[in-house]
Length: 420
Ligand code: AMP
Image 1 (cartoon, rainbow, N blue to C red):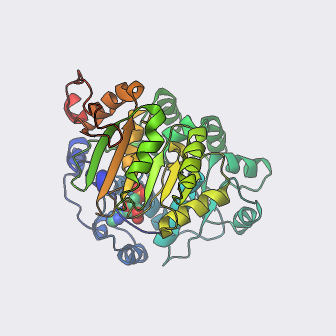
Image 2 (tube, helix red, strand yellow; image 1 turned 180 degrees about the horizontal axis):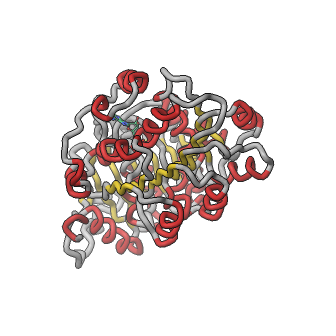
Image 3 (cartoon, rainbow, N blue to C red; image 1 turned 120 degrees about the vertical axis):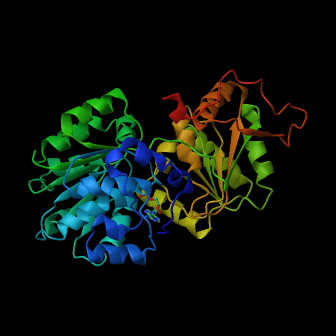
């Protein structure tokens, strides 16, 4: 796994730290100041993490104190270490052989990624980490429960299966993390999450991460968290120097042709193309493959093995275009991903930010290209409103005569923070 810091998230204003937590006005500039154990500091050095990210500076101190934390932060902000380091710091003093921390995440990819990241952070300790998710056999997961693996990272569905069959032991769990809680809501996992939480001793620490707080999530927060420290890094999306964003107006039926035209440019070496549905993902992948573009596809109907292989192929450069739906692509961390292609404009404007956050990571340049059919124009208005500026429009090489610039939007661009 490549460790990189997503500049989009890193730019989430450090100002937010001062605005929302006036009690923490002192400047934390390194991990030593957070009071972490030497073994963890060593792992951080191995990973070349020199300075904590904003979410780490804010969330680690209350979490180390044992407080509940309610944090709004997305993939790419460094949130995994923000909850992982305090958990590891505490578990290092505890006896081995009992599951003491449970991390729930919406997708297999995210669960796997969190487990990998925590394993790297735990490398100089004896704390063990296992990922538990669906689409693969039960054997290894069963063994992980039997061993009393100290940290389990799980998707709710598979974890429920293990609970029903009596494998999962929750009696010694003292910290629970809900990661990307709003995604778990979108995916219908909330009832399972509630059932799992009911089985965990009430005397526990809950660390809650969610990019947004829709009513159902607020209700869960009210029920499950005790006087949480609130850590809010709202998506104040400062312009990212390294990320180019451009739009092409294109009729729906010509999107594939336009994509193939753009792919004649060899500068597009690795790209994720997002479609709105699984069906459209399959169709696009088939069309690209027919034109001899090395292509793969991930969505909810693909098996875990297929999804893992697709990601590996993308990372190794064997696959040029990975076609994905939003949910399947959550949490994907591919360093040096050059291009994100929004083949379909996302229905939810925030997903645009999640998608483009897949590129321009690790301080490499990135390019986010969006195809806009006429019926998708209103969605672009919402995106422009959220990111606080209009997106540049390019001449469509297939239809140079079609005006690239849509009618002027009737919105006033302003950043989210100013709107508050
Ligand atoms: P996350 O939001 O946890 O998925 O992390 C996003 C990326 O940032 C991952 O590749 C991490 O390895 C990396 N990362 C996390 N914390 C730091 C840090 N303090 N310094 C540099 N990179 C980091």
